[in-house]
Length: 499
Image (cartoon, rainbow, N blue to C red; front, side):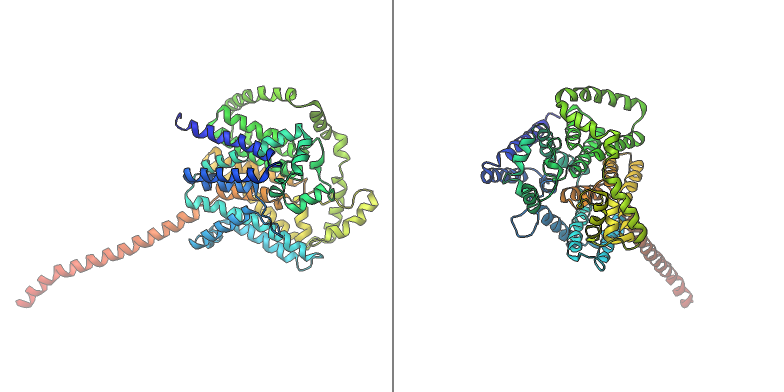
């Protein structure tokens, strides 16, 4: 244990140092970026498999947009490289044959492609399909990790550690919202946030709730998307806490919990409640639950004294009945049901919602730019009933397979994909299509591939090959036995011939 302590201290010191790096990058961003790059290369050089346990998880989190005319991230290029590596090893087609989630994802992409045929805005359709492919690449990357034999626990710990600066910044920005605005205007933000979206945000061309002083999103323009991301990180941290425990791991859980609550997302609070209930149902016995409750009561009691009263008041006011009743989602979903009755099979096509909804918005008197605010409704509008069914199969397939795997293995690490899927599904009922956010899609589907890699198909193939080899061996053995018998009879035949 003492031998591993210096590595842990060095890692957490690096995490804290990176916080200062991000904050100072607005002043001397070039030198800071060079310093970070040199430190990352040095770490990779001295640590075995650091590129898999640290570098790739860091790229999935920070993305790093390249200074090109089109929005391309360094993370996307790395995922493509892993795809090509899998193809060169002959594993790619094997994934498509044996992994059911890949088949569900391929069905979703086909359904989305069909929607382009009758779409009012075909260019939008091609863009959205291109974004959706990133999730498939991340899923295949998770399979690659398992097929390579990399440690699931080390990978999860790497993800947890490299994302800590984002969580700490989100907590800091809810306390100091002016610093978040300064960060969004900094040069470093253009490498971490999609440049066109960031420019529109700074010029106030788009309405984004990250500009609300009572909400924080850090690298996410939409704080509801940030809530999904930090919720998934909380599930990973909880699974590692249940795996080994420890006060340090408990502190990491509270960092991600605080980062998620800093988004002030009502859907996020609902998703958190459902995830906690699910963990209680599938994981804890009464005695262990009581001990965990005692561990959580004291830190939870300190939060009201640390967080300012305005933040807590804003969150509670957003959860009261009047605020929920006045939410525009009720009018939006009413419009959705009317159009579903008229176009149940094909939906509205890409751009169809933006063309039809403004007429309805004018009659009820609110903004014409509201999206459907439901993950599944948006998919129906794009690609009709077939796309909706494919999305349900994919997301609920991840949830169901995660639950089955947990009951089969009883591993705390496997529970994280259950919590992540619940966060995505529950919050997806109330928010926009955040699976096109590269960070959320990359982390969620990478996690699904890492945990839910199905080795049963591989073992069946191995058993069949062993059976074939044993059968051929038996045949060879019977042939050898027959030859021995023939050789044994030859002297007798010779004696008969001699007589």
